[in-house]
Structure formats: structure tokens, C-alpha cells
Image (tube, rainbow, N blue to C red; front, side, top):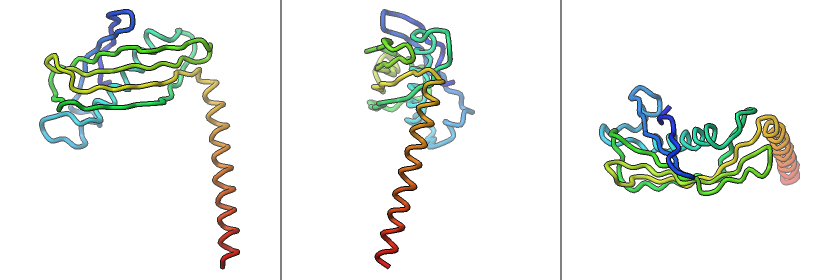
Length: 161
């Protein structure tokens, strides 16, 4: 984990800290010796929306899978392995359908009181059994499409030869 447990600090605001372990696998790539690589912040932002959603926004019943619809990252300054606050602001949450929650959030990273990175994310948390069935159907559909395309290309190639 790259984050501490999130704390609910306002109606739609949550706070946590970046918690970097030098031995985690994500730290072994692109290490300059000074700043943290951007992938650390991307993964911390992903963990932040998962943790806030699971702890504060979803019912305790059932298991949910998450699907990311948008994940935009803006790096404003280099981030160093020093104390870093993560601010999670829930922009929108739609739980009108019992089997899923759709949400969007802004996740901002701060060092020494300055914003150093921000992430705009929109995602869904879907009941596991519903997503598994839908995902299987979509996978079968794309496989059929690939097979049809390959057969058509093979037939077209035979006509040209």
C-alpha cells in the first residue's frame, strides 16, 4: 500500500498520506535518486479512490470490482520522498442503481503546502457477479469479432494471390 487509511474530514473530503516503502516493486523502476517517479503517484491515486470508496461509499454487503472510465494526471512539480498529503474530493456519486456506484473525484498531492500533482478520475464500482457476467459476454464478443476479421482477411488474401 502506498497510502495511509483515509480520514473523512468534510462532507465530500477525505485525507490520507503517501506512504512509500523503498522496497516495493514500483520504486525499482526509473529511480533518479531524488524525485519519486510519476507511476508512484498514479498508483497512490488509484489506491486512494479504492480505499475511500470501499470504506465510506459502498455498503458492507457484497464484493465490488472497479472500472476506471477516466484517469487524467497533471504533474505540477517534482515530488520527493518527503511527507506528502493526499486530498480526495468527491465531485459526484451516483448510487441510484443498486448494483453499482458511479463516481468522480479530484485527488491532489501536496508537499510543504504546495500542490504538486492532481488527478481527475471517474470510475464505477460494480457488484462482482454482475461485472463478471458482463465482462465474459464482452470478451466472447471481441473474440468472435477478431476471428471473423481474421477469416475475412484470409479470404481476401486468397483472392489476391
